[in-house]
Image (cartoon, protein in one colour):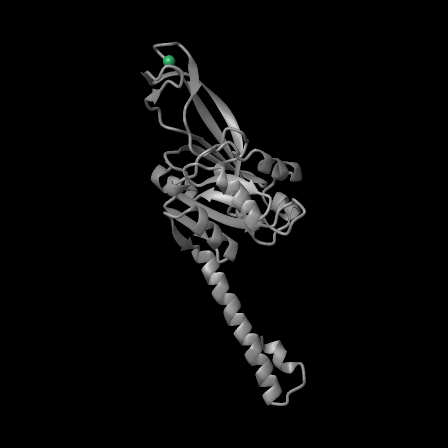
Length: 265
Ligand SMILES: [Zn+2]
């Protein structure tokens, strides 16, 4: 008997019903479905909960417990009583455009923020390099409005520049766009085209000065939030600088020219 509440918490996937878990040496296989519920027909907006059929869709998720994770999702199709059209149920964990979970997409992007190379990420997530590159092409570039909470960050990308910008909606856990760089003119060109800039209430950023300038120019109603992760990293760096300086002073004061003192750090 699987305790679904626990599994839901463990997997971090809302509403999911896990029917079976299999373990083979290479991967963890999770069989799942969503509860049957009333949907609004996307064609005529009438309510229906009439099931048409099911099909299995396999998708990859972020690695768990050191294993690659594959979901076997029993995807349900409903029929509309009113217009007879069929449609798939809604889910929040699988983007339309990819055979990988939203969480895996997020995971890959998180890894790109640090110094992981594309090759390492591909290997770690059991994805091909091509998939990793394709991922960037399939991110939703069609967004025409900005969310209430907007977060900007950078990662080492593949565009031949040192950093690329990434825009996310942290509330709905969506990647909104990838920018070719994080310089002022790039950000400015990009944000200028959005009409609902005054609706952005929070602008989450690290301490990169151009972000602040952009926020002050384009998001006048937004409260600037410094991302905790970046803040902690800045403090670590600051401590590190002080430590190195003190180390030098100490070596100088003691007239200790040997390399020995260095080895303690
Ligand atoms: Zn209908």
